[in-house]
Length: 66
Image: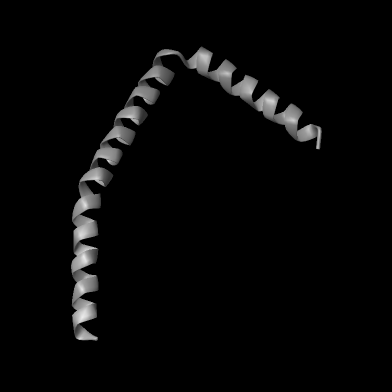
């Protein structure tokens, strides 16, 4: 039972070592996308507001059909 436990721990460490760089890259990509989105919204608040109203209208129309 001790050998299996050690094998599982080794496998878990290996998976963690493989996933950590991918998770860090995903986090950096999300932070970059968030920064770009915030910059776009600040530069174009009217366009974003109209887009939000349009999306809300479409969702409202879809929801009212049910």
